[in-house]
Length: 344
Image (cartoon, rainbow, N blue to C red; front, side, top):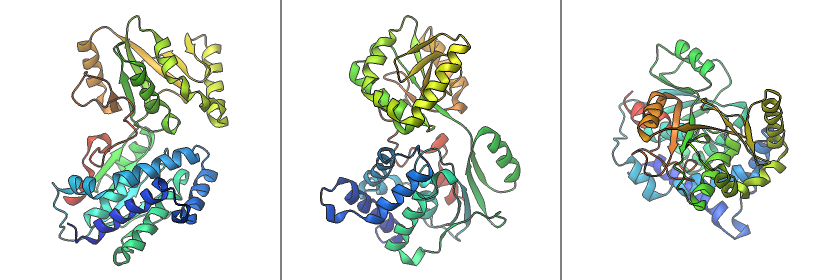
């Protein structure tokens, strides 16, 4: 495995990113990375320097020899013939499609990428780095804006409406089609302030735009919402970001005009709602009567849920503050994309 040029290129990419964000030596800073981050922010104002840094730094910390080899240990990366895999990527959060590209690259296949206009700068930069570290495979990843007709398999991510189109259009090829998903948290009322503060990371990171962002909480009847409001107050500077503030003000106005009952702390609106997807600046909540009843509810909606944040509630739960720190084997929708491409 250590002789695999693509694996070595990925490890060098990880080392490069760690050098950029974990070093105090200004001489190691790559001005080209700063430039591409500025381009990303100027083309999508949700991609602030803070969120871009978090994404890139997270990937740097993931792409270590220990974690990469542990992830790949159970797979046979030997393929008979390279196929061409079409990736149609979302752009809701920075580098949201990088894991799919990483899977295709490490599998030994060729990749054709249709970028989202919302995230059109970071991924090409990462690919350029991979090509720099492994020139022998620099022709295996292509970007295109054209209508693609020649491909062997598809991994596409979009809205529920787009997914229906994808399922029809790509039905004759092996495919993975992803729809909208949201993440939820289950609170018992016994959480300490540190756990609730960590939940704020799950709610507010990337302004709540990711499928791993908690958009709804389930709470027992009689829950004291002041506990949550106090714990997440350190995130209140979000309201100073104009785009977030505008969404918060708009949604608050809609709720008040509709005479919905809401709870509000000046930067986050809590609204009782059975939907899983809450607007920016809002967090939906729903009361539950018993653990058994809630487990049944979550199971009935498992196709809509990406992550469940909880403590001692169910086996697949994610700890508070960890939804935006997925591991390499944490596949979207629990579909093993590496196994999918290796089986083509």
